[in-house]
Length: 254
Image (cartoon, rainbow, N blue to C red; front, side, top):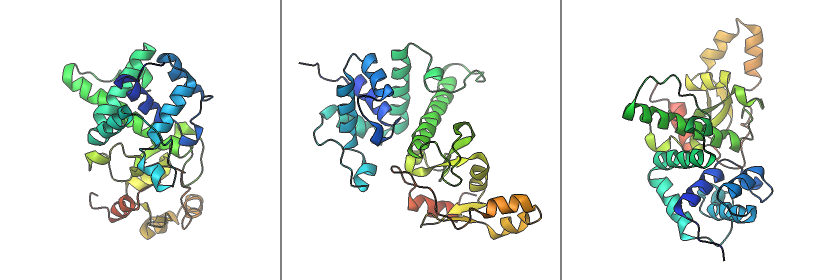
């Protein structure tokens, strides 16, 4: 009989659950196979554990997807811990992942830390912030299948996981994928500066003043204008919150 899953194993599985789309969770997925090897379990066991996490996911429930019906106490405990302190749990999960791979956390989380000329607690705080930002980016871009939700651009290096409500404005929403949009760099800037917004029906709209200014540059105007009035290319999971989009449009923090 297989040993019970440890807390560490549950956290590693939770990390992976957030890395891959729910529809691609299966024993043949290379990332599932990789985690199974790291924790000395079978790919089928890991796939089932990820499915068990799915039963707790409110985003899946909203779509009418239930995940696997049976589960373990450890999944509930990790999920509740994430709800209570998301940044702490994500950071711990990335440290555990790096340890299992025997690499530095900067490699595991795919972040740059060479520019941090700090030591001790101050350095750890900034590393944690970058790790969490990287986690959020992967989570959002994965949900959108690594495509811009406005243009359909599918070049990950040119995509940004933009926050609807800014990172600095609400700590509890920093890692919430429903507070994120997969955007190309240009539209991310326009969105961040309030030059464009997404309405409650997920329709793309530009500031009239902004469009008027762009008429002097016909090529730029025509390119931007083609997306106005079109519906956002929505992901299957983690659709943006209408509440957050309304708050962004109001732009109280700008």
